[in-house]
Image 1 (cartoon, rainbow, N blue to C red):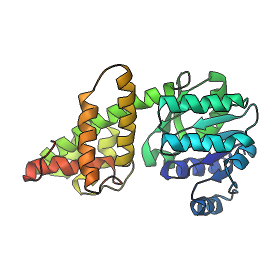
Image 2 (tube, rainbow, N blue to C red):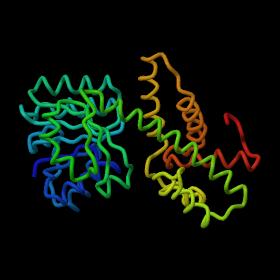
Image 3 (cartoon, rainbow, N blue to C red):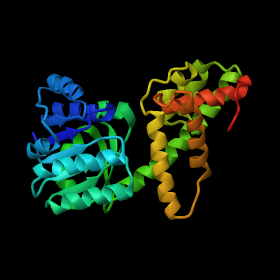
Image 4 (tube, rainbow, N blue to C red):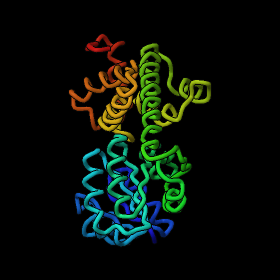
Length: 294
């Protein structure tokens, strides 16, 4: 057993379960200890007393938390237990400046740091089919690869530190475009009186088909927005995209529009719903509801 997981949200739990199935999970830690104890009891692994203790118990430290400040806090906390030759893999989606600072602190201890954000949502984490975009040294990736493989369908080395996050930013912009198109098109379809049982298989199998359409289409039309990827998190990620775009002196209308729409929905209390809840706003256009900002 060689990997420890810090951060046991929806994604972290899926990663930990897949590592445990392969016999590679050494320990877990979570800020809310009760969640860690529940999962540890299920998987038969110990709960580390703190991040430093987890680092001391494994070869690869995998971090999956929500925000930039959380990553830096966790890295600072695990440093006392970190040994030369270990690899810290951050699967969070955070800023390029954040991973640069985390990498600096890690390298000073003689260890390696990889920024390795993932895509595939809750379904991918549970099924072990996440796509992992990695920035950092190729040698460190090869060392950590056996501890990433249990939850990944593909592990792609994108370049030096920060390039995993740059690749993830591109992915999140694509996700914004896809969910905009799907929610708008399905609102139009529903308002037109088309039968979803006939329409959705045709759409999914055609040139406009996508994984998001397959996984969310039926649920969107049914008003089921159980989160696979929470809207508030996607909004946070798009804000990170805007930070990178600012460096290039560019504004992308798709990013601006999606964040504006998310702001409307989050103000109504829908931030913890899936990004497919964007359908709520699109449907209102056809129902004559509140059209502000559309």
